[in-house]
Amino acid sequence: MSRARVRHVVALAVVVAVEGSRAAHAQPTRAMDLQPVTKQVAANGLSFPVADVGTGPPVLLLHGFPDDRHLWRYQARALVDAGYRVIAPDLRGFGDAPRPQDPKEYGIPIAVRDVIGILDTLGVQQVQLVAHDWGAAVGWRLAADHPQRVSRYVAMSVGAPGAGTTIEQREKSWYMLFFRQTGIAEQQLMANNWELFREWGRNPIDVDRWIANLSRPGALTAALNWYRATGGGPPTSAAGPAPQVQCPVLGIWSDGDAYLTEYPLRSSGERIKGPFQYIKVTGASHWLMVDRPAEINEKLLAFLVK
Figure 1 (spheres, helix red, strand yellow):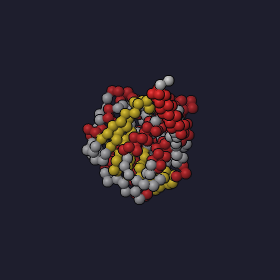
Figure 2 (cartoon, helix red, strand yellow):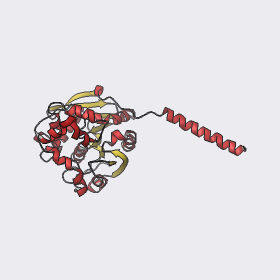
Figure 3 (cartoon, helix red, strand yellow):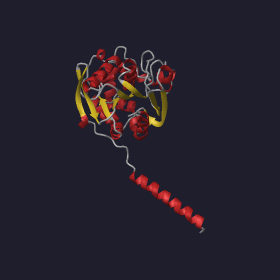
Figure 4 (cartoon, helix red, strand yellow):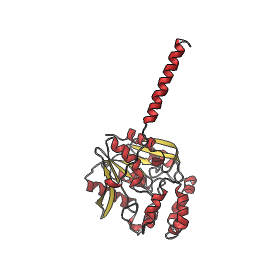
């Protein structure tokens, strides 16, 4: 074997050894147990469970249906390790939060007041915001109506208001009309060990946690009240006129989303005043932060600032 060939083989062996070592020492994305860092926070006349952990610039995480603060277990670990303070509440009607049974006690404006009250009680004047599904619908309004409280916004799955509705989105949104059928939706979703709910969710990772939460007295009705609220509107692109959001916004949508189409989020930059970036994640479901935690964490850390 020639000397050149020997050097090539040795160099290749070194590369293989280094990459193998890296793979062997690579750490999987770690989840954080948010229960030990959860406390009760008074806001808007109610008391909300809020995970509050870490030091540094605060990042507010808002979940949607049918989730709770534990949706963000992978992002919380990455953010805290990167030097951020994570604030993740259960929104009203979800998880361990209060569960009013009257739909009039729900809606985006009410949820915005809840979130502002939580931040006020915690003494937090400004946050960087990451939100998903109904939480993202709340996030668009929060960033628009309280610009001094939100410096940067990551909207997942749900686009800025004003995009309009296509026939494709109407077809995907069939369940929203079903969820508004009081009593009927509850009965059919729970039937046969939650068979329809399991099929709707398409999420074997979290479905048992969802069902455990929603099986508690009044919990399913409370969560569905987000769809039944007067003026609530569905979280396709958030309901209402285009928001005058001025802060930088990152939109993230996943091509496996069974409920929301791409256009409302991808086009959000046309309907806001601030700078806008868009990322499409391939091969992930609506719950992209659970399906692709490492990829989502990388995108968040590249966008958020200290």
